[in-house]
Each structure stands twice: as C-alpha cells, then as structure tokens.
Length: 355
Image (cartoon, rainbow, N blue to C red):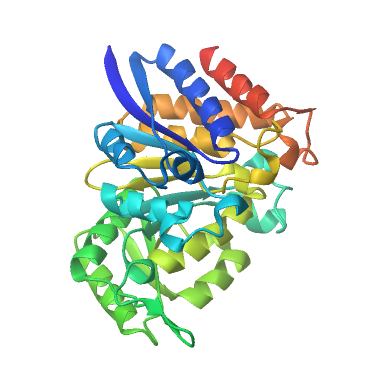
C-alpha cells in the first residue's frame, strides 16, 4: 500500500473546521483506493504568531518541504491587523509561497448545474462555465524591488524575468492540453513594458504547443469579458496581481466563494487551499461551507499525488451531494432539500465515496 505524507496547516478562523472535513473525505477515499495518508500538523498565520511570535515558523517550512503535499485552510483576521506588516499572517503566507517555490496558482471556476441560480448572472450566460485561471504566484508587483514608502509617497515595482514567464507559460499550456486546448494570456502590453515582455515570451513558448490556440487580451477587457461571456475562456494565463483580481471575479460566477478550490504548485511541492478567507465572523458556528477545501484535496490527489481516479471519486461525491439538495447556509436559498452544518456536509460527501 502506498503511503503519502501530508502537511496539514489549519490556520485561523474557519480553517480548522474546513480542514477537518477535507481530512474526513481524504480518509474515506484512501480506504477504497489502495493508499494511506499520514498527516503532520504545522502552524501558520495568526495562531502561529500567538504561539511563537512568528506567522511562519521555520518548523512549518521544514515539515512542508518534507511532505508529499500541503493541505492548507485559511489565515488572518481583524485580531492581527494592527501588527507590523512583517508580522501579519498574510506576510507569513507570502513568505511561505516563496520558500516552497510554488510559482503557479491554479484556480478553477466551475458552475455546477445544481446551483445555476446561485450566480447573479443569467443562467444562459454561465451554464457550462468551466475555466482555469493560471496565475503566476511569486513574482510581479507583490515581490518586485524596490518597494517602500515615506510620509508622502509609496512605491512598488512590477518585475518579471524571462525565466519566470517561461515556467508559468509552460504550466498553462500543459494544463490546456488536458482541457480544450485554448490559452488566453492576460496582460497590459499597451502601457506596461513588463507586460510586453510577458506577451512576447508567452508567444514564443506557444510554438512548442502547436495544438493549443493562443490569444491575448488586455486585463481591463478580460475583466469585462468574464462577465459578458465567461464561456469563451478555457485557460486564462496571468501575472500575479492581475490573476489575484481576475480569479476572485471568476469565483463569483459560481455564486459562492465557498465552492472553489485552488492549487499552488512548483518544482518542490504543491499547496492546496480554498480561495476564500478565514471568515472569523462565522468561526466555530458550524456553518462554513467545506466544499472548496474538499475540492482542494481533490486537486491535491490529481496534481501532486497522481491519483486521478481518487480525485474523480471526490468530485463525483461533491456533485452528488449538491444534486441531492444538501446545502450549507450560504446556499440555503438555492433548491435546498436540507440545510446542513459544516460537519454534516463533510460526512455526506465522505459517505457517498464509501458507497
């Protein structure tokens, strides 16, 4: 029997609740798939600061790098907003991504037929939407130097190197080869030199994937097109800040941020997490939607562990749960047969896998 070591980072707010349900589902799928998980917990975020004085202890980096994958909940909250910037939970997360070398953030945006009315857009616009945002994660404006501020001015620098663009472009084209073989690269090449380099390098890399259709789009137009006609997109390739914004916009096509997962992958290890935040206002109430975290666990099986059949079982169980009318509170008004707690939804999905 194969054994996989998984680093578990529950984090803050609803993080522990949603991670517990993902682990429940992983245990259910491992029991019928011929492999076993060994979990090791690590600290990051506000809880790590409270316990160690550091939002990202070195031990967490070591545990993660010595695992097969990382399953991560969410971090942050008002409690820590007044800390110095380098001590805030979000600073720990940025450093974590850099230390692990996870340069490609994969964010699928899928509209479930069972929740077609949950979106604010018309069903005719969103029915059948299934796109993937491939976002460069450890370069660009968030990491560029120089940066700083004084009393009257603040400044950041958007920097991309040819090698950074090349590796994220390869990820996008490789993923497109498993989908509908279309990549739309998003930039602002009409005004930014860094975006012109991005466009030139992506075009060069596309020659290595002749089966994939490449198009380019300015980021402001892409934001509009995501609402006007989201089905035109298959894989959207973006830099860091553009991807941060567009992936959150794309997430709302589904009607709830509690449904959508993400993967952050690189040359060392993959980190899998829901795209939503820590939601401290509902922590401990048992009403958080764990589906995004459970779907992130499915992505972990698919992209880090090469267990596609097990990932398919989780995806099918999620769809069946929604089809049967089980909803958490955020989706209660959309054809709910039964409104369930966080734990109940996790158990239903796990039970469907076991059957």
